Image 1 (cartoon, rainbow, N blue to C red):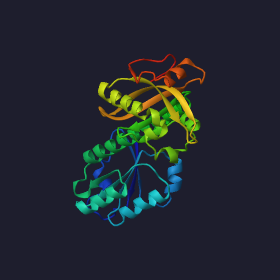
Image 2: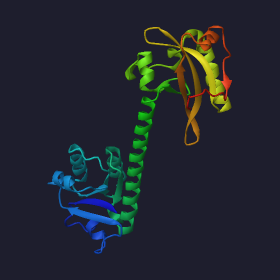
Image 3: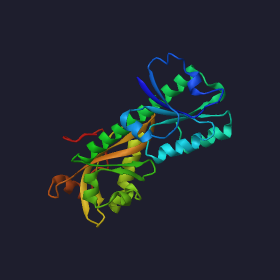
Image 4: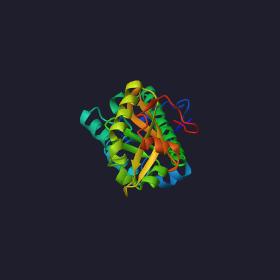
Length: 269
């Protein structure tokens, strides 16, 4: 069931949402009509709406702005005239979609509302997934960061922030090369290129540098992150090495630059 609130100020208008909706309603829709935005605060407290439709020939944009000023975040569909400038202005202001008054039909109303609600729900699900992913990253024991294909850092989990000593505002202005010891920057660039060329996970050992200049030996896996089938970022999942470990000695003795597809016991990619 899709719950729709219609603010109908179209009295006297030959074409309106109220006139386009059949007397029997639309299957799968629960539509509440209000004649103005007055009392909406209490109405929103008592009911859950998936979408709001504003049908006000003279002040639709003002009513939309009023809804936003009250803090309502549900998608809003605005009924407009068949004027490209009016439609463009409405879309730029943030409305989810527009219904043209000259073409108002029950079928058109249903299609638009279903499309807007589906898009809004997909956006909510995406944000929830991102929140869960962020929580997973922040609670991981590993050091996790990502950068775009130009090397600019795009994310860093909390353990990595804590170890390196950078706040979000600080690391977001850095490149991957700036958190790697100068002696290992060429090695890091080679690993990045190998990751992009082979499109596979790559193992490496390198030395990271904290904000205070402390050097930290790590072993890491790097792999590509895709968006719509296109590689957009590289993610690094690293673990700090014990200063007394043999792996640190190997780094100091110039260990191999990389080892494609090698996995580390206990690490996840």
